[in-house]
Image 1 (tube, rainbow, N blue to C red):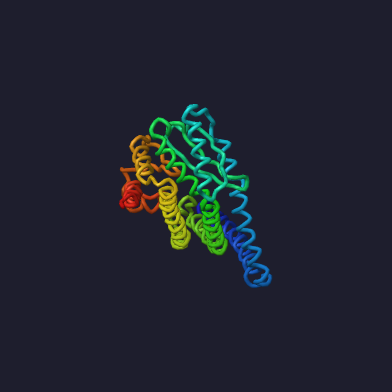
Image 2 (spheres, rainbow, N blue to C red):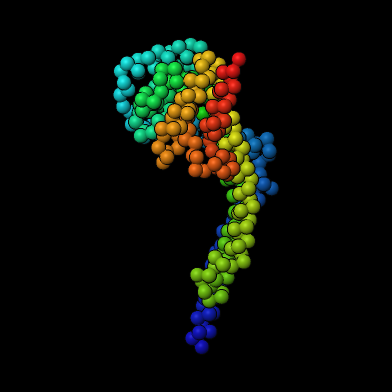
Length: 307
């Protein structure tokens, strides 16, 4: 009798749990119905959604660089090299369509250089260890590469792309939220009804839920691959622009190879000097990389140097 009563109580708990999840799923459905069926006119809704996405991108663009820079320690650069570096900044900015950026010297424990742009102007961050590895021509080529990113507005376009990706993921998740919540409720209720609450992750409903999410995530995954592919193309474009401005494509090629040979394995670099992980040369690694393979970049630069 006690066992039967226990099973009945578990079944009741499962029914109550499912009712709660079903209620939340229904509420989510009603909100979606209001947004889709009873929504304001398309002429009103579309501008509002676009304004929201652009507003989020702008906030990330405006404050993201500032938050990052607050975490970057500043150090003094070698006096003689820093002076020549500042002269190179002035000369390159005069030849390029870019306002003179601020220059921040730091010690990140790995050779690196990258550029950040925002409404207040651009910032070029240079790890002081680069002065140990690169000569003046290579430093100039690296600087021209980063200035090319500022000139092309790559920071803003990258932020817009990733914000669009986040928006796509959010919209897909929102649209599917009623079904996801309902399947979650079914899975957990089935465990209670079977008298084994902890087994709900093995239920059919939970497996269906995982399958739905896996299939749906293909959309943002494809978008992410496209964003990363564009990022790699922009690196090639910045390399070419640096070669055109300095007239020294081999200097940038030499900088890339020198830093690639000297960077610690535990670091993966951003900016002009990424770490090419020789231990992960598989296709997936390359698809998920923000930068092209170093050897490919060097080969292109060498072709530019060929008369």
